[in-house]
Structure formats: C-alpha cells, structure tokens
Image (cartoon, rainbow, N blue to C red; front, side, top):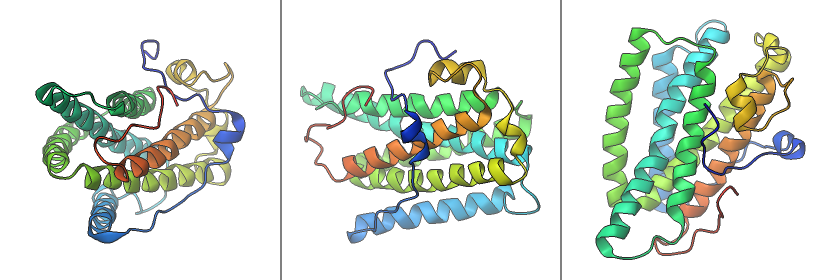
Length: 238
C-alpha cells in the first residue's frame, strides 16, 4: 500500500511545524449554515464517542481518527464524481477541479489506512462506519447537487476542526498520555506515502496528517469562493 497514489504534497519540516489553527469568519447565510452544521456534527460525535469522558489514551485516539477519516474521505470523491458526470452530461470541460478533489479523497483514505496499521476494528465499529457512511454519502451527494458552495465551505470548516483535533493529538504526544508515539515507529505505509525518513515516528505521521488537513482547509475555502466554471488554482500535487 502507498505506492500507487495520485500526486500529492510532500511537506518540508518548516511546513509541518508552521501549521496554525485558523478560522474563516462566516459571511452570509450559506457560510453560517455550513459552520453551524459542522459545529453540531462535532458536538454530536464528541458526545456519541465519549471522547471527552475520562482520560484520553491510544485506543480513544485511534478510534476517533479511524472513524473521522472514514467520513472525511467522502466529500472529495462525491464532489469529483458529481463534477465528472456534469462534465460528461454537459459536454464541457471541468476546469481542473476533479483531480484536486480525487487527490483529497485519496489523501483522507490514506490517513485511515495508516491508522488501521495500529488498530483492528471491532464488528461494532465496522457497522457504525457502514451506517455513518451511508447517511453522509446520501446527504452530501444531495447537498452538492443543490449547493456546491455550501458543501465546500462545510468541508473547509470541517478541516478547521480536523486541524484542532490533530493539534490536540500532538499536545498529548508531547506532554500527555501519548508520549510513547514519540518513539513508536511510523508504519511503512506512511513512510512511503509521505516520503518520511526511515526512522520516523508516529509523531512525524501526525504532523504530516495535520499538514494535509490544513491544506484541505485552504483548498475547500478557496473552492467555496469560486464559481463552478472558474479555473482551479491548485495544480496536481500542489
């Protein structure tokens, strides 16, 4: 795994360590609706998963990462498929959006595959993923047909939350219950995909994932501000 992948950013040390928590203030009804939806989704997931109850540990972190990434891999694929079908049906070009959206979907899936190297999911977890994915795919597909702007803004705000989540994970690695990830070897899959040093650790992996999420945050907020027939400013792998 990790050898047959789309071009994607490979982060420098400076880029990995310079990621900041940012927030785009909502402007207008669509932005406010997207932001409210993300906040409600996060609150519901925090309650349902029990993440904030008791002490955080590796089991809780892996469960959270795995579940979130099974959902995070949906928007890019749905948006790419929708634009692909629109291009075929309308006999028009896509203006370069499809590749970026597919790369985002694959990137989120690689986050999941990396976490799966450390966690063997239970039957209950698998059933929860099937249910959540079915609901989210249906709702996001309908939403993208109605308002791509809402959906990209929604993903932009979702990625803002993802950056917060992985920043908290790094804090737990540096000064909390996850200090063993400072020395835990990075899975071979992660080393290949992000072109990490052979002696990289799980902390290096989390840094790379956080940088990916920050990139998706910027990309989706940008796409949300463009018209559907504007050119995508992001080249393959950038």
